[in-house]
Figure 1: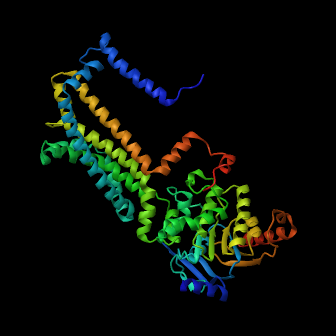
Figure 2: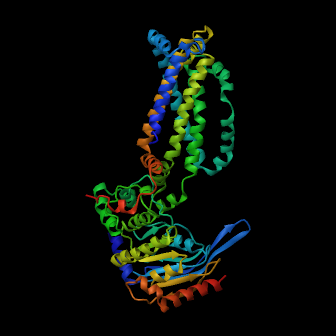
Figure 3: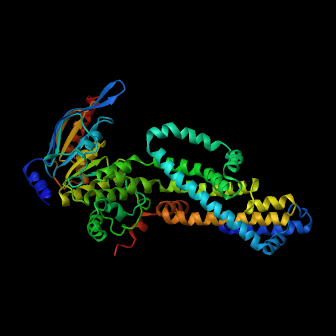
Length: 266
Length: 272
């Protein structure tokens, strides 16, 4: 509990995520391959951050580093005031590109998986997973297996699993990339609804410029390998965001600016 | 006209086969030496029931132990080789090649080492069934989606938890199909071994009666093995369905329907 209090204190005091001059070089056969170069960013608590960039620019690597799932060669990453040398589900929830739900578990059991890893009792697990299931709009699907769910529903379950331990930070690696356009739009909208009720700090990676502008408070644009941050754009569209906004000039200008940056970096 | 269910057709075929078995020798199309009628086969089986029963027990005993050896060693070896990359690169090609060897050629060596009693059958059939179990266990572990492990790690799973909570359940379907095949091969191994050199068991009875041209007793033995194999298949299917619920459900759905319509999904009962 003291730990959680510390996390809360840190939240109040400083940014949720601080990345300070992080570089990474992959060991290769012919010397190192530079993957990330001098990345710095400061993510305010409760902000919705989107990172865009060309394929292979290292944005997923960067996210994995924030999750404590991958090491970096240089620099410092702090999440709520402390480095993250290994995954810490109390601080960070991760949602992956493919839903990565376990096909041998029901929806309930998938959502409760992180709790069961720490030996939380079955009743307590159910007590905590039920509201998550409601939050993502899947009441009544708790006993289904993943193959009985559509792609969008699987990602909803995945989000519920990321939220069940109530971490202050949610990292999302192209979570909607595998979905069709319509489902993708709906899920983006749903995510904003969930975000506005939970007030998590979200770092979201995408290829879609429309999705980036629609979701974000701030967009970071990365260059192709080695990944550097080449632009940092504030998206000052009002919230709640609506589909109509996509047709506005402001929206178009913002999307165009990101596109120009990515194109210029090639 | 409605197309009959595959199940109905299968039953019909089976009945037709049994009827032919009875009818063909009676009409004289085939001499009884080649194919004794079903009734006569069942007749000698009934008359010699205790003999066949005792032989079946011997065979069953050998099959059970051979399967245990095949599955036990197969899973351990497969998990080790599948889980450790260095071993896999080194040994998997060797084992794959060994699988192609007709191991029955080694059976004389087994009788030399273990005698002509049950031991040589158990060892031979155990090794015969070992390969598919080992190879499919290795494949099951090797083909686990790395995304599963990454997700588990992100949720704070320890190495032990990654093994027990992810690797084992994820590889279960592949391992199980290997176990089924391994068990089936163990039955074949035992029967073949009994037919070659033995002093007991169904295979021995079949060979014995064949040399004295007692066709009904040969067929009675064949019938026993058929029953044994079918029973094994049904049993392992049932077990698989229990253990790998999510897989069998998936397969049933795939064959039954295309993705369920959204309306139906929405109309699902809400959680109590």
